[in-house]
Image 1 (cartoon, helix red, strand yellow):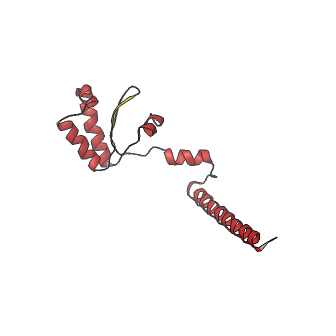
Image 2: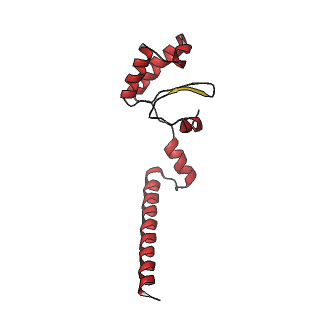
Image 3: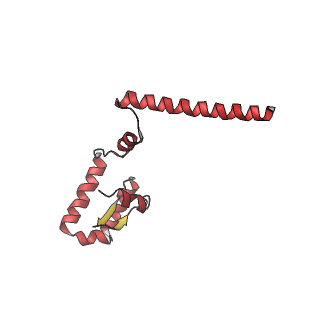
Length: 121
C-alpha cells in the first residue's frame, strides 16, 4: 500500500469520526432537552411545531381578521391604506399570506410559494 493511499484512508477516517462525533453530540443534546430519542420523525415534529403569537404578530392578525370580516374582497388585491399596512407588517419582518381556498392571492416577497403550498393548514 502506498503512502498516498494511507493518507487518503486516514483523512477519510478522520472526517468520518468527526461527523459521527458531531451527530452523537447533537443526539445527546436533543435527548437531554426533550427527553426523547431523536429520529427524523421527532426532529421534523419539533422543528415544525406551531408556537404562540408574539404581541406584534397578534396585533397584525387582529387587524387583518377585522378587514377579512368586513370586506374580504379588499384582501384579494390590496391597495391604498391596506397595502401600506401590509408593508408596515413586512418591515417588522412579519410575513403576510392571503389565500382563497387553495389559491394564494398575495404573499410577502420573503416567502416562497412552494413552501406555503406544502404547509397549508
